[in-house]
Amino acid sequence: MSKHMSRVRIGGLAVVAPAAVLLAGAPLAAAQPLSECSSASLPSSCDAVAAVVPMAVPLVAPGDFGNLLGDFVGIFISNGDEPGENGGLLIGNGADGGVNQNGGRGGLLFGNGGRGGDGFWGNEDAGDGGNAGLFGNGGAGGAGFQGPDPYGGGGRGGNGGNGGLLMGDGGDGGAGGVDGTFEGGGRGGNGGNSGLLGNGGDGGAGGQSDTVSADSVAGDGGNGGRAALLGSGGDGGAGGKATGPNATGGAGGRGGDGGVVAGDGGTGGDGGDTHTVFSPLTGGKGGDGGNSGVFGNAGHGGAGGDADGAATTPTGGDGGDGGHAVTGTGGDGGAGGKGTNDVGAGSGPATGGNGGDGGSPGGHGGAGGTGSGTSPSDGSDGADG
Image (cartoon, rainbow, N blue to C red; front, side, top):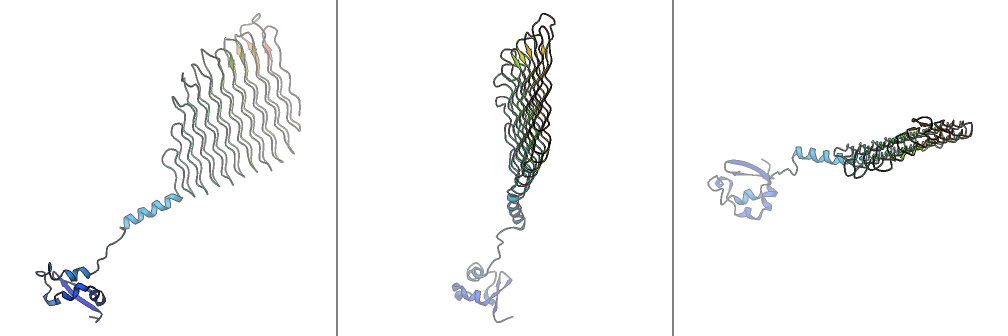
């Protein structure tokens, strides 16, 4: 044995320790020689020896170390798993939102936003979609509560989340909720905007209104999201339909603008139709088309909604205007909605909606809507761009 090592026996077990360690323990001076240190004398005279023999105690068990490492990595790279939870700080997808809750955000580098949660009774509005980071798509908006809910009407659809700052599409807007008792339909959510490269999200459709004891006003469609640099704008959502007293169809959402350098404008949403035996009733206006970038064509305007029923003054909705272009072609105007009286002769006038104007350059004006009934009146055609 080396002269730098010493051996002691504890309870019949030989323990080898560096001599420096044994000499460093002050109580060792009173310890018995090795031949006298036996199991019988261990509890009293050999305590000093046991006290200076080092013991190896692991700070972290191997399994615990793996869990700690996994938790640490999960902070930066992980998908959200709880409702509305964000993705990892750097990489990961956001989780879908719960009831009325926004969707989680994507990671700062890579990851898609989560879908917004739907509305529910007593809290009808839906959650918005989560945004992406640098690369990824925005989450879609949730749907408004689909009544009938006598306390709050149709809920608003959630807005779509924005796409990644560098690349990614915007999320689509959620549909507005339908109501059938005292309140109108909910508005559709707006589409999310894109990143530098990507397309805008489409707007959500407006909710239908079927009220029986108040003015029946349907929800408007959401606007389409815009593109930033290269990409097309999203289409506007359609307006909701309406029945009941003083019915008014929802207006169509506006189409989103195309990317500044290149991209087509989105198409405007169609106005909502109306159909009822009550007076008056008016079709919804069509949404305007989105403008294009330097290269690309502009979006067309949406058509006006029809007004059809046994009412004295049905009036069709006006068409939306076409978007404008720079080097491409302007969008066509939307056609005006029809005004139709179902009762027949002697029931009163019906008027068609006006056509939307065409966008410049080269967009055609939309045709005016036709009217039918006693003393019908057609809508005027839109101007060419």
